Each structure stands twice: as C-alpha cells, then as structure tokens.
Length: 423
Image 1 (cartoon, rainbow, N blue to C red):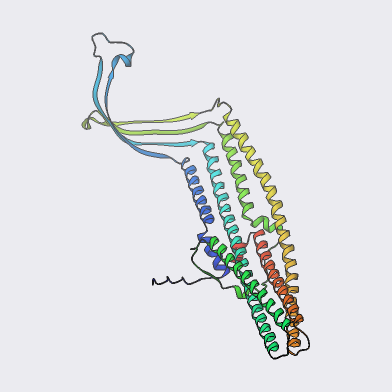
Image 2: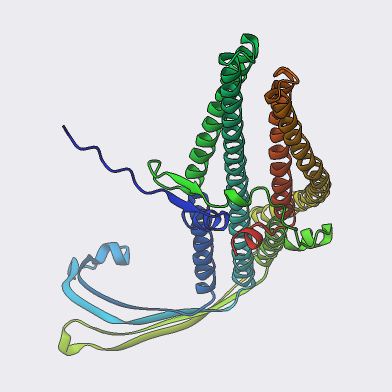
C-alpha cells in the first residue's frame, strides 16, 4: 500500500500575525505597492525633462549625389555627380531647457501623484487588514460556537445516560429517555453545523492570506474571544478626516490636477533652451578636424488650434470632479465614524446582558438536572433549560462578535486598522 502523505502542521495564527501575513502576501497590497513604484518612476521621468541631456554620437557614411538634383540644373561640361566619398563623425552633444514652466508644473504634478499613490497604498493596506480582521473574528466566532456546541453535546449525552439509567432502574419513564435522545440528536446536528461554519471561515481566511489552500490554520486567539479589551482611539470625526488615507489621496489628486492645469496654461508662455554638439569630422581618420555647433532656441506659441484651451478646461473639469468626490468622501467618513461608535456602544451593553444570560441559563440547567436526578420532576425542565442555554450561548457569541467587529469598524473609520491590529 502507498503510504499516505503526512499532513502539514497547522499554521498557528494570532490576529496580529494574520494581519502581518496579509500585508506581505495579499495580491491587492502587492499591486498597490507596484502602482506606487510606477508613480515614483513617472516622477523621475518628469524630473529628467528639467535636467540637461547629453549623448555621444558616432556615424560613418558613404555619400554619392547628383549635381543636377542639388543645383536644380545641369552644369554644361561638368560632372553629373559627386562622390562617392566616406565621411566620419564622432563626438558628444547636449541640450538643456532654460525656461519652460510646462515641464516644471508637470514635475510638480508627478510629485503629487506619488503622494496620491502612497495614500492609495495605505488605503489598500487598511482595507485588507480590515478584511482579515473581520474574517479572523468570524473564525473566532465559529470556534466559540463549536466549543459551546461541544459542551452542549456532552451535557445532552450525560442527561441521556441519566435518563437511560433511571428508566433501566425503574425510576424513570420511557418518554423521558426519548426526549433526552431527541435533544442529544439536536445538539449533534448543531455541533455539525457549527463545525462546518468554522471550516468555511478558515478557508476564507486562508484565501485572504494567500497561503497554500492545503495548509491548515489554527487560531491561537480563540481563548481570548470572550474577553472585551478596551478600545483606545481618537474617535472624533476631525481625527478621521486627518488620518484616513482616502482623504489624503483625494487631496493629493486635487493638487496634482491643479499643477496639470498650470502646465496646460504655461504652454502659452515662451520656452527657451540651449543645445550644441562637438565632433571630429573628416573624409579619412587622418584628416578629421574638430567641428562644433552651439545655439539657443526661443519659442513662442502663436496658434495651437485651441489645444491649450481644451487641455486647461479638461484639467479644470477634473478638479471639479475630485472636489465633488472629496465632499462625498467627507460625508461617508462622518457616517462611518458615527455608525461605528453607536454600534460599539450598543455592543458593550449586549455583551454584558449576554454574559449574564449565559450564567442564568447554566444555573437553570443545573437546577433542572438536580430536580430530575432527585425524581422531583421529569426532564421537560431539563430540555427547556438546555434550549435556553443554547440560545444564551448563541446570544453571547453573537454579542462578543458584534463588539469586536464594531471595534474593528471604528478603527477602519478612523484609519487605524493597521496600527491597532498589526503592532
């Protein structure tokens, strides 16, 4: 028989480690990093246009021409052609802009584009960190549900065994055993459903982390799911405006659009540049002598067919679009902050009530079990108590999940997901 391949050891994940892995390996973050690098190279290209350019050129040509084609008529008694002769040329050349505001404004716009792409990169990191946090919390919720379901299965099995023993000893009746068995099967079904949800949550987390699909995951923060750590953050809307990378991105894009508009307007202004070259020229290497040419150009646009006006209008329209986006983004951020704060406050109340509900439900089950064991009552009270405990467990897990998710949502609304969950 072929030996089965050993299953890889599970990847142990804390929430912070999961966020850290995602920020290194998630494709969307990688694409944002590449976009930033591309923007930086575009800035370097724009800067290069402001700097002097130098090159070295060498050429070798064999020339033969028609005199009549050059002079426009034949030369009576003269040769019909000149050449062929060999011409060699080698030497450096240069050019440099002296005054060109268009190039300057384009360079300034490229710098702001770098700032915008840096903010977009931070946005991608924040969004992916939020997705990982939410999926990790969903995994913790599923783990807690599995743990609670397992405890209820064990309790239902113990109560079934108790009912079976009492019926065997003539103390209990068959319907009590039947009810206990039905409840036991119900709890087994709930456990299976909870376990499936746990697996699905872990599959989703593996996808976000971009790890091998065959790599099992284990959430090591599961034991702390029932803790409710305090959330320390500057929760004001003004702080969110200052910290959210989306706001920084749109502000940089507006500045870049203004510089682009300035570049378009500057094309109406004169441009000055210098250029020249120095080389050795001759018909043979031994006859080559230095040759050079230097000059300056002064260019004034007179008529461009409306191109400059159209480029300026287009840039102005882009600025207006970005300003509309900025206003909409401010309203969206304000809504997200206020909603997250309200949900977090509500979740705190829900957690307190849910924790108390679990304690009361556990006490109810314990008392009903004692009464059933003593023969004072049938197991209807026990079954009812088990159902109440199941609901209390579900309420507690849902409340804790809502609290932790609201905490993550408020961190996202204030632009602090990475700072809170990865450091």
